[in-house]
Image (cartoon, rainbow, N blue to C red; front, side, top):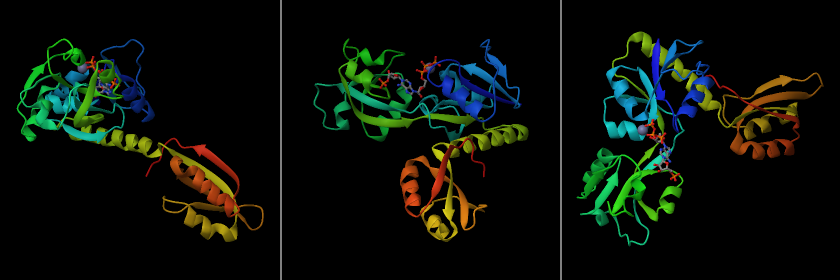
Length: 283
Ligand code: PRT
Ligand code: ZN
């Protein structure tokens, strides 16, 4: 049995559960218990505050966890970062009142900075030879300059809207963050294997993102040209059609280049093109 800690409520909760569900791990979640079991994978979910997840994993209260890299870096507990998950993207940045002139990091020497991420900030300042006063506050960091508690802030930024609303402007970024899968360093062999199985499924889901399954019909003699147009995978699947001289080609194409490829294929005589969505790609 593998125990995974995810955020009980907040920005990462929904995407974490969706990731599990796409990996074929469904959680009975109706009653919002602290601990819930999966019916179809030997896994149980422990719902925690995101701040507590790195410690829970380092202590073995949970075997693995899904949490923002910002929390992992701030707390500094000894855990293994196994995989980046691509959601919960944000950055940790320094912001100053928008009317202030800014001429580089030296600006922060001797300044008071309000933040909920003092460890990451002090490491950033140390690396860059800046001496500033770091004031740790738990919330509403963005109002600190306007009420005179600080000269600048160091906080999570995503769209940047919160900074603008508070008359601040982002001037430096110290960390790019996203949700990561972390694991304890001393998992048993059984748990390691379950983690590998889970990771295998997560990777299959990720690989299929933005990919389309395309089927089309083409005269035999055009096949070499079609192969030149079609990217990736080892080679397209080619099946003869009942109609003399024609074949059916099956191939996986990235959504980004879908229309270009389809136009090129049509230009060499492709017909009856079907585009299907792809759920999992297993290698
Ligand atoms: O209760 P619990 O402690 O579990 O939750 P929490 O309130 O501490 O965290 P939560 O749910 O707000 O965020 C969880 C994680 O989501 C963070 O640790 C980040 O890894 C990630 N994340 C992604 C964000 C944001 N984007 C984000 N925008 N966390 C917070 N914000 C805040 C930011 O501080 C800003 O004040 O949202 C505000 C809006 O940002 P803008 O730039 O889009 O305006
Ligand atoms: Zn939190």
